[in-house]
Image (cartoon, rainbow, N blue to C red):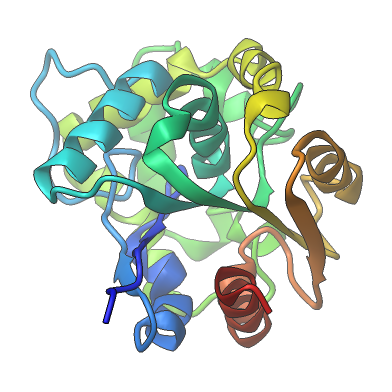
Length: 256
């Protein structure tokens, strides 16, 4: 019996693998689920000082990761900034993608959305990320309330606390923030018309930062795409509505 293809869960900016734990658990009986912590602010070990952690560098890190696991074609899932990176993968390495799943994420002229754009700008000021990371020790300063309706404290801590523990982690996070640009997502969008593999757009109906019109635009531009709205969820639908998201992904992957 042929083994199902790997199901690859991509983690977004300042989010640990706990973001996807419920969805991964729900899908693991049918698919191999991989939920790494990428060097985007919620990781536990810093990269080398000269590591390229720009969006382009992250693409190379992703490719190195899937090559290390000897994976050929993978099913990419992108959320928030991870969705932007998944779109860049479509543009630069479409042969590595078997299917693509985009939940609410940066796209087109949004990367990052306001008010998070302010953090990107402040990342150019020396010492600011140290200040922000220490403020984030207190939940009321984290800003996750606009991203999730029901984020458990354990998950919120895993997202926010690592940055305050290491200058190396803040260095990685800052490199990525300072290299973000909507020019990258707009350039990636030029290649969507040439991508003929199946795409699921699972957009959060109540998203505060990524309006539904962006999900609809993605749906229109990809040739073989399906769009569904995830109810009662902000950006982190994998936390707010994991059962519906899991069911939509399973149906999509099985062609139901």
